[in-house]
Image (cartoon, rainbow, N blue to C red; front, side, top):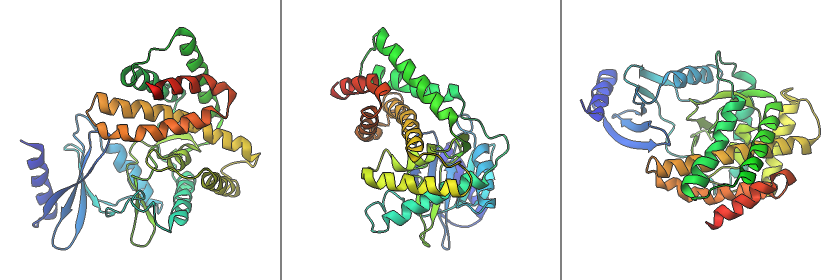
Length: 322
């Protein structure tokens, strides 16, 4: 049976009343989202084909978030065998759409407070560790997909060795950070501005236990929004002061913490360039190519600030011109 027909039958069995079905969004995975509207309510349906995506982690993590008072969508109906979830609808006002509003600073403060609340309260059993191998494999996507397949650049042996040194240095620094709940995609497209001006959090199924600055980097060095550098520094200070106050981090020199934040950004942005390239080449999702220049800019800026990243700067400059 056609999957769209199958989900319509399943929705009818769940809610037992007339409804309309429209596309809500799609993401970089195989998941699709639909908006289900009846005469009195609106719900979101997640369609995750079970042969390609499991919904078990989404259900487990989402339930714990809701139990801890964190704004994840409440699940009303689920079928793990079929890969369907009917859940709360947070509307269509994303953080990205609100970017130009005069509430911007308050929204970022709320988003930072959410990160800290997740780190404080989410102690999920069997949460996967963000291993050094995983950190490395993600960065290697830059070599394989961004440089090799998208930019058609082949590194020489010295450049390969230089990148290995950079990867290992970044991983070593990431590993020294305090380890907490990491959402892993905490950015403007996955944060919803609710009617009470609170923030709803989406797309958390890939969460891991990992470095405490990861979600902060995702938020403040967003692939879809560019903030002024002085605003970023103010917001990093805001986060740093709060995690010290909450005893999530022992107070040290802020410049050391900021370097950790920046090197976490190197890891994430190498990964993102690889993923965006792969989405275009392998999955024919070419809209992500539009967001590559900002990610390149983030990497270029940070590679100019640290001497050991000089080889990366040279490779980036070559690839941007390619």
